[in-house]
Length: 267
Length: 274
Image 1: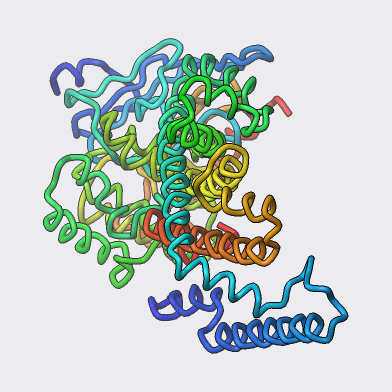
Image 2: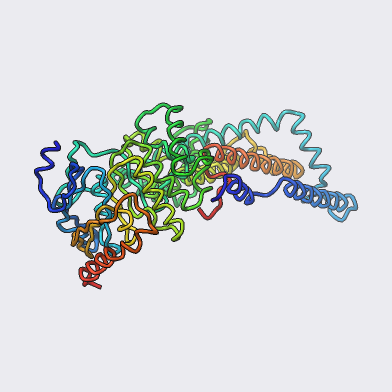
């Protein structure tokens, strides 16, 4: 499988690690009563195992649609997504807002995937408690999500994704609804979790700074119909330090900005 | 960083405190005692003839008469059985068809037109037809009550399924839920707030329907007792039975509230904004 993946050559493949999945000429058109809207056109990219890839683009450009296609929640109109490890992973989706189940306690939310997988009650609670600690929610296990702040609920969503051994995290603007301070805090917490427990991450955001500070690579998407107009490597070393990296990241951020501006000619 | 304790106390602030509730009940009792004494004096002084507005003591007497003779409990048990039966059958069919119509487009196309055609007709208008079909016995009465209880349950269940946050369905699928797991862990609890609204409304409809059916076509039950009091012109009994009906209503509301709190514990103490 891995050999097969290595053969599907790509100019984006610069790391030595094997490929996790590939999007190959993915296009998607939404049909509605008022005509059809072309959301994605020929989107192709590779993601290596344990790579942190950020996708930026103008709002409404189809970033979320692309993520839903990778998550197998939507079928592309044409093109395909190939997982080189074999089958598509279960779980790992983190959504922007209201992604917690209001009818489950915090611990039950985190253990959701484990429960579906048939893990026994006591075992899944123990495991949920360990991960609640890691996302800073210990002590809230038996609360309901509505008793938490927005930032805490977002951490709960991340905890629910990482508690499973899903090798791929698909994050759709997970910090979009947070204030600047909480956002910065959550970004570094995410990097900490990722550093101690490596997985592949695809992180959709409209915040260029966030994309550069978190990712190994930034994919820049154009306005609708969206395609990938640039694939920019982030050369900042890890572990990242926001205070140190902010100045050095500005050059990369400017580059992303210029590409976004020149590609979004449509108003 | 918010601690568990502060979050909890913030949630509790929403409810009323126990002493506040107690003082309110005391005031309520005081108002009623004043009204009852005034009524009693009105009748005893001869200003009121006691014909339309019998003295509270007379009403209490006839209530006691019905209790001690066993007439009240005999008929009360019949009425409660009819409410429960109607709520059970109407509610179960309402939830089941609602879940089917809410999740399947094809079934919705079949069920929706039938419901739309039947919904505008007052429930009691079906009663003669139901007697023809089910006979004069208990089943035609339960069927009539069930029919009334069905509609709010069905309509709210459909609305509950359709108003679900699609993100929750996405997450269920992404985390690998099977069809059954999706139903039990995502769809049913997601629709639960509106299903419980349906239950509350259905319980009311079943209660009203039962009293109505008993007045029109029954020799037993509280509704029949009420009708008999008017026909024999026992105005004191009429008042006594109205009091009993009010008590049934309050008891039923409390029971439904208790069921709702257990069926959806996450909605208890939840601020309305969410």
